[in-house]
Image: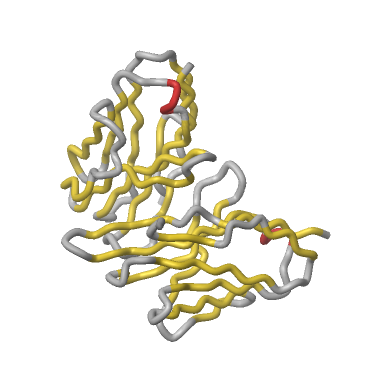
Length: 113
Length: 111
């Protein structure tokens, strides 16, 4: 298995632009998580899905952030419009179920200028 | 008070030393617990789950104390390759399920 796949690995964009991050989970995993990591705030859970349904999005910072999981093999995290304070590493992780080991993707390093 | 707190670190220890990390959690509805390891500029990876009776995996021992609401990780005979950030993770089951990562403790093993 290729593991969790995230794209792009690096993204540099200008303030105000739309950013879309993509995640392909491990086949068969029912839970998918989006995290953001910065030096200041550590690893923060943004949202998670179970069986493609969003369960808890209380970690999504603002309305500028949205996440979708249209099917079991794909999820997106969108930021529109992006701001410099959104600069961080965004991780996608998946698990068989919510309480199982999470497998992380390599992350997307986002820089908003 | 944060829901999950860890020793602030950083811990700088010589090779061969024994080092222990603590993690405290505030929600008594916490159900399951893990230790993850994160290398610099890499993604977190599971180190070990933490079971109620305590568990050991080679040089690593994890313990859970539900009464005092803390978990611990003990590393014996530290290796240079153990240098990383160690994150404790707590899964909470209330009206909905919640996963919380601690802020992490940085470990540097020095030759």
